[in-house]
Length: 337
Image (tube, rainbow, N blue to C red; front, side):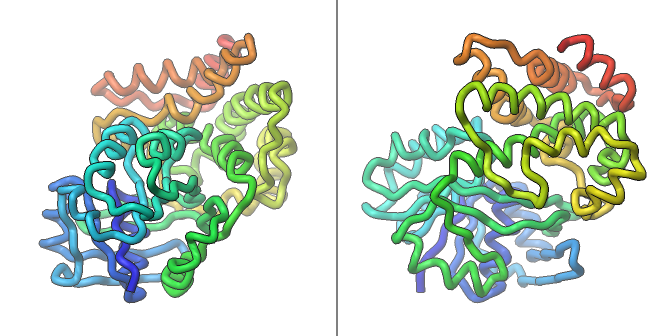
């Protein structure tokens, strides 16, 4: 049986690892002591928006804080925040056996490259998690939205495909992962808006003013991608270039035409919103900041996404946790752009 190690087992890592574990895979979770203590006391409970439920007793959960636990792993899933990628790569370099497969299931675009540069003796693949995971209670993790895992195609994945299939998390292999990552990033531009709105995703996306904020951020990114000759993949029934126009439609029209975008657990929030609530540094520089850096490489500007970065950073240092209305946030972004 293949040994799977998940490094950075927070919400995404615990959910993926727990689903694999529930299906009989050999899984070790590596993460913060706080979550380890929760799992030892409460076990691991996983749910999803389709009423699925999986429970793993604490005695069956192997959760440690030392990345050295990956020493005998055949497959490593990296799910840490982007800011920690280099430090995790440095730690894994000292413990992994030659030839181990490493998948980066992280936000942003360049994490697999960072891992690959430090782990040249290993197969490092970019991956994408399309769904949202929140933690409603100690040891509990809930998948609030849909979608399937995607990963760069490689024959080295073959020994592990069955584990993910049995867990109900099939790996979709892609030969165009850069396009997939850009398409996911376009959708993730909403994370900052949701964090600033300080309300559930479904409630936020049901309001036209917030959707128009997202449309501004996406249109700016799409213009830059076109200039750079990058065509984002089609991850939704609607092509990426059409989504901003749909977002800007009145609420009743959007509810009818874009209903699948509202198929979200009513309590789900973006991971960036959860980070602000917990007083953690966000990943805004690896999401909206990627658009800003693309603009800089092209000798252009990305004022809307730069403004969102600045506003989220301001919220990181504001203990009062501001909640922007859609109208006020839209006015701020229009003034910037």
